[in-house]
Each structure stands twice: as C-alpha cells, then as structure tokens.
Length: 473
Image (cartoon, rainbow, N blue to C red; front, side):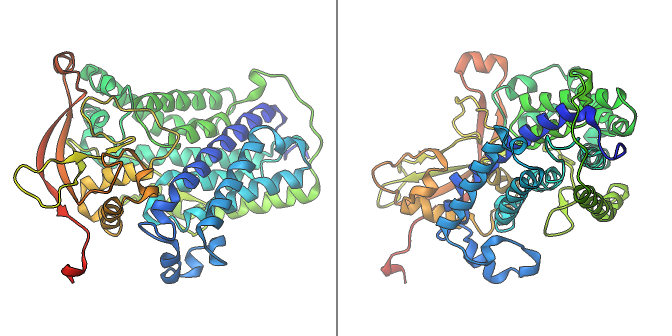
C-alpha cells in the first residue's frame, strides 16, 4: 500500500482539515443567523414556495422531506456544532469510518442549504466549499496516511480555481491585458474592507505590478502544482501569499480563505515536521477512494473543456451535487461604483420638505464617513445582492420588493440584517431607494472632511412606496 499514501503530508492534512472545518463553522453560522429574512417561511424568497416549483431531481436537499424554519435552524446549528468538533480534532479521535461520516454529514447539510438558497446562495464559493468538503470526506484521519489520490484531486481543484480565474481575466476585460484593472477594482469591488481605500491610493505603476503578478500566479504558477517537491510547495506558497493580499484588500466571504486552505494541502509537511508513521489503510477504504477518484475524473470533463473554451463560463456547477465545478472571478471590472441607498420617513404625507432617514448596512458603503469594516470570511448575503442590484435592476427581481415591504412592516428578522434602523420605535410610513455614484475621496478630501467616500445623486431606484391599505383596493 505504499503507493496509496503520502505519509509526509500528515501535518498538511491536519492543517487543511482544521482550516476547512473552521470555514464550515462560518458558513453554517452565516446560514443560521440570516436565513429567516432571506429564505424562511416568511422570507423574501421562501423555501416552501421554491420547493413547490423546483424539480426534485435538480435540487437534492433534506428539506424535500419537510421544511420548517425550526428544522432549517436545527440543520444549520448542527452543522456548526459538528464542524466545531472537527476543528477541535474530533476527526482524529474516532475510527476512520466515523471520521468520514462526520465530514459527510457536513457536506449533506450544507448541500441541502445551498440547493434551497436560490439567489442568496448563487456565489462561486458555495460550490467551492461543497466540492472541497466532498473531497475532505475521503482524506482520512490519524488511522491512515493521507491518500495520494485525494491529495491530487485537491491540487486539481486548486488548479481550476486559480487557472480558471486567470483565464477569465485574460479573455475578458481589456484592462486585464493592459494591466490597468486595478486602477478601479479596489474602489468598485463588491464590498471594500478597511484597507481598500489605501490600496486604491497606491501609485498606478504599483497597480500595474499587481495586475502583472496576478497573471503570473494564476496562469503560470498553477501548472507547478503537479511538479515534484519542493517546487509544488513553492507554487502553493505563492498562491497563499496572493490570497493573503486579497484578504487585506477586500471582503470576499470565504473565497480567499478556502483557497488558502487548499494551497496548504499542497505543502510538503515534512519540510517543517518529521515523519509520523501511520497504519496501513484498510482495503475497503482503498476501494472507496479509488472509486471516488474515478468519479471525479469523469465528472471533470466538462469543467476541463470549459477552461479551453473561448466562451468560458465562471462559477458554474454541472450537477446538482456540486461535485466538480468551474470557477473564476472578475472577468469584468467596473469603472464606476453605484450604490443603492434606502431611506424612510415617518411622515404620513409626503411634501417638498419631507425628512428622510437612511438605513445603514453592515458591509456595503452608506455613510461616507464610516470606514468599511472587515467581515470576511463571514458572508453578508443581503449586502452582496445590493451591490449586484445597483449594477442592474434585473438582479433585484424577486426579492427587492419583499425587502422594502418588510422594512415598512418593521420585520425584526429583516432589521437584524442591517447595521442601523433609523425607526426603532415604529416602522416608517414610506420607503424609497436612490442610486448614488460613490468614489473614494482623495488624501486632501479625507483630511479636510473626514469622509472616506464622496457620493453624488444619480436617480431614483425605487420611488417612495408605502403599504397598501383597504382604501387602495
């Protein structure tokens, strides 16, 4: 069985598994704390309504058996508890089969959530977590050495994440080819972080170096993952450094952190730790891993073909189980940043002097004097969809009207998704949404005004709206 295991990667496996389990904790917490307003029984996109019209074959989920908000919460909190136990090392304290079962439970629970999450769960890092989590089921524990085949599949996944992102950029926006995309990206990215203003104000020649280095790391370095050690470790280290740069420059949920965890799985642990003898794997485990490897390789045909296609698609799943997917990010970079600002008033009748008060979100820009916060790897789903809605009203279809209605009703679950409710005593009588053009201030403007942003009114996104009364019918 010497061909089957790679004992030198025992430490890499531990770090990978603990890191992945920690990200599972974050993902399940994000689901538990936000679902009621988004997809709950009285949410903006209720799960029961979705399940009635969605084909069962295309949306495998435990909630096909039964759905209630209480059951969803139980699944989310159970997932968080199991993941926390794995962070603490439970996977190595139990027999191999039990350890695999624990990882499988996480995967099934999160798959069940993603497949009913609709537009709120349409991000590439959801599929990435599921694909990584599926492979983690077969990575083993202290009862056996890390299987070479699964380590290879993890590198194949990391390769697709990085190489796919590199290709989508080169094939997409011309600013990536002329190295100018980062003149804009730090300002227009979905959710800036506390250092994004400073990244934007770096000298333009350094932005060009950033873009050029990105191409090298995403288009050249991934190939080195399949070379002998220590070259593969160096390649993984370069990817890790690049991802840390992205962590500092913005908020991308757990995308960067999960890529870092994948890169750590490619590091030769023997470079920092000695050998750690482990038992030979049982025959049943070898058979299962070989079968799973064959399945993943067969399922890799369409994602591999997508990489070679001139019409490359990014963040696409090819089966409802999200086993092998296509990835990519920022094939197009916006030059201008528009933001939707939600305002309300408690005045019974509107007039020219009506006083409007602004709702504040946790992550997305609003108050120009508020420094953007760091939330990643936690995922603020409403904030992200608000960024997409500002790009095009099409992204707001299906949920935005329900969001406004819930603000007018003072829905507690919806208000918990916001940083500040300007109407703590009673709901407003009217809500409106306005579109503003945001830009970062200059150093001089920041010193003079204390504002990180400057904003200019563009147009109304939603005219003043109120709840319908019997007299309106």
